[in-house]
Image (cartoon, rainbow over all chains, first blue to last red; front, side, top):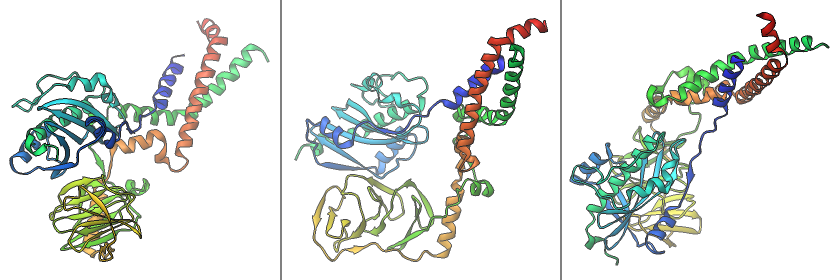
Length: 176
Length: 250
């Protein structure tokens, strides 16, 4: 009987299905939703000099690219960023308004575990948060058991988006 | 057949099935437990580079290299990996169609994305907001990136590659492959091999049976069915006579 129970346990291990990567929202749809149906033209911010150093401090590693694309209208800006959770990149969109987070949306999740970070119960925690001088978010974000690395990746992207938005002056982001 | 004989036969088949499944169960159990703790054990960061294992797993690339001479540099593509002067860049790119030198950067185009590289090979931006699917990449007379979706459907980008417009320009220099210097070819092979395969990947292949070859997953499927049979024969045997045998043995 004991051997049967043990083998049943092994069978459960065998049959546990892995999660698959999935697109939850396309970047175009995210941008359209974030700017009342019509996204402004994209702009570019270069990660050079002091900003490159600040980016490295926030990300915990050198930024993957030398420039980042963003969309802005007045004091509202949208950022689509990638960050590795465990082994695969998580793509998320952030809307920053008046240096505070106005929207977080996981667009594509490619990891096998941790997809719970896409749910509003997690992403809504970021609304209204800002970036403090010590590179921390203004309020702590509750983690998700079993999704530590994905949670960390979304937090990192949120801080990065806030940092980038800080360097986009409203005069630069005014609608043409 | 008496109840005792039936139970005896059931137990005999239970033992045989257990013996056949045992080896695979050990593989499944050990790989399953290890996979549950890949982060703690560092298996996802540990690269396996043993040539015999890479060859067994088919990790030694048999794909053809495609080289593109861009200014003073050599961009080479092996499978979905991009190499800049022999060094592998971190970004992967599917369906690479070519590389060109623009006025101030190097553009490596895949079917749906462009990697914009600086003169030193650093990634400037991974661009996915562009006309696709790309069939060819070129550079206009004024050094801007152009992509062809079809022979008569060509788009050219602005200087920052933010906006694209359809053009009818016959003076576009399209990317063409070039001969890859032997030294760079060898560097690329070493870099590709050096990346190796993570221990986690090998464990996943063990767990799924893929490591045993084409029929490996079927083998594991067979083991799963045997486990189910074991569970069934064990429960039936216990209900029928296990308790009785226990009393008898006592």
